[in-house]
Length: 422
View 1 (cartoon, rainbow, N blue to C red):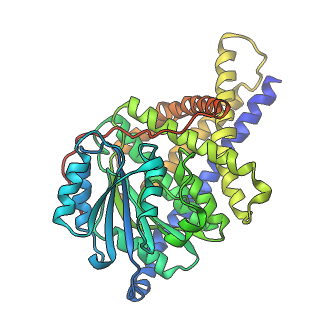
View 2 (tube, rainbow, N blue to C red):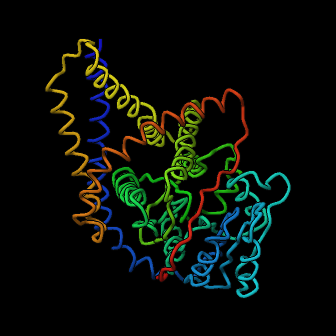
View 3 (spheres, rainbow, N blue to C red):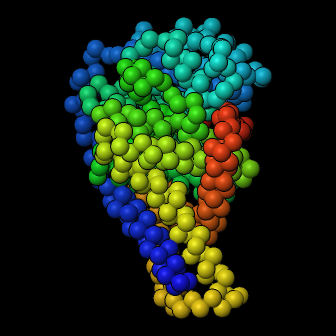
């Protein structure tokens, strides 16, 4: 019985590794081809839509000024652009700082959440702004983001030139990538996510996931969907499924680049990633339970990917590790022996190859230091994710049973050095 469980878990692990190798190839292809459409698309950027940039902000005084400096430099007709800082029940100087910029730049505005949307979280804040604006395109940035000058232009370019795109998502880079060992790992993780999961799935299946920041979506779609789901901790993933179910796709267009801050301590990372894991678990269970109600069955493939990632894959890793360690101290008649060691060694080498090839896309990230970071990452950061996902599943199960209300958790920000915004 132990052998069967062990081999079953190894199969799950290898399925994930091979699938990511497949995605990596698609991501590399997208990297080589996505810019080819820009010269032709640029010609169609004539009658531009009006754009509202939503920046939900709750106690963001550390980062909001740098963010608004970036917003003030955006390349987009100012008579068709408005920057909306959604000050959601902040108790610090967020509102005061944003108001100073609103007084200096007519296209920057500050609104305070009101009524049932006040202090309830990011989704509620975004819904509040949606009800109080009427632009044709909605762009969302987190309060720590400093988008490059052309970012919004490129996001809108994708919507203007691709009528089937309900949303266009860009690429994000880590501002504080070299701050700590943790941010170095996160930087590697984000690059792999974008070129494997985003670029790879777009290249092979025309599927991408809306992130929490640096994306543009048509107002007509948000109105049709009734806004953001206030019960979802991962409101971006949940929105993704509903956009596809309407019959649209989501384009990954990495020409639109933003820079964002990542957690510098384990405590902040743990809280943020737990929220992400719980949010994705909520989305998987919500929509798989509605399988026969979904109009576009293609999105089921992506839901299964999340189900495989947050349930089957981590179950396989936990079981294989538990059996292997237990067998070191107690004889559970595990007879896999050297086969397990060979498969584990090959899995590690495949992981290393996938990550390093993906990092080569971002040429500045392909270096000897990151080679050793990836090795260390496998034995530390990747293993931490296993414990975190299990913990998140326990919390999410408890929330569902007790019917607890979803509350805002804002990622803690850190003081950061000024960087030139391109």
